[in-house]
Length: 69
Image 1 (cartoon, rainbow, N blue to C red):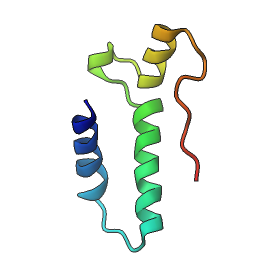
Image 2: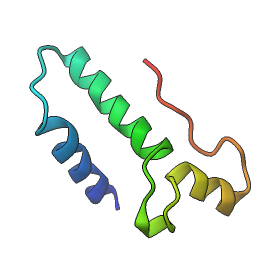
Image 3: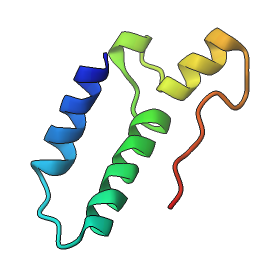
Image 4: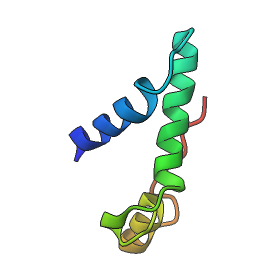
């Protein structure tokens, strides 16, 4: 599972962008992770976002926290 997520970051962030600074790279990576966790609906999670899936499964409001820089 972790390897799959790392591959997604590699393909969707690093291979699609040319970064001028490490700060720009960090910003794009965090943006991707937040979009993935809070906006992207995944077929494997019955078309729910990871946040929605964990809220329903665990019954807790703050399961995942957004990354802020």
